[in-house]
Image (cartoon, rainbow, N blue to C red; front, side, top):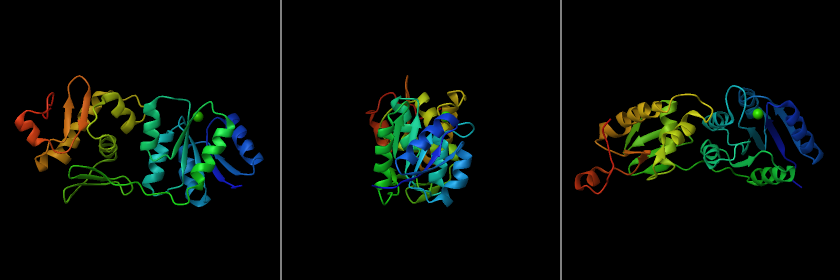
Length: 243
Ligand code: CA
């Protein structure tokens, strides 16, 4: 049997105790912290096999915690625990660098099974570089290039571009983009997406005479490989490259 050393990040004390006790009873080791900030502080020193990360945390939420772990190049497998079952949450968790996802309430056996499965992966692969046309984004080093030119983005711009580049060609709603780049519990207005899309275009498109981030009328936005030619011959409808 694999003895797993787990870091449990859960602010609900009663639930945390319950899970920790269950893990201990099954021969595993469990440390408990109550916030993402604490998790970031201890995870590098703990030599954990897995991080069980609640999404709903005070302060920094689970998605952001996971994102920061990966940004700090901590590749310990992460299983997100969330009460929310929407597909978009699952995607947000995986986008943030989580390895698996478990919806509350869950059967304890399922938690054990998933925990063992991710902990068994001896080598956690570095995320691959995302490519759309000649635009490249490296989630691990958080760097972006247009052709040979490196593009400097703010953290938010990066998160937004990553959300686009993980679903090339697909129209994403403002709400979806908000969830990915701002976190689902943020209370920012959805028109902030429009503002940041404009920033992104100024950085990854306009200087290189590209129109990769398209407005999809009535929906939101999508990224495609450079479509200057399509625009010219009219194949792409409902595209508004302006603001
Ligand atoms: Ca919680």
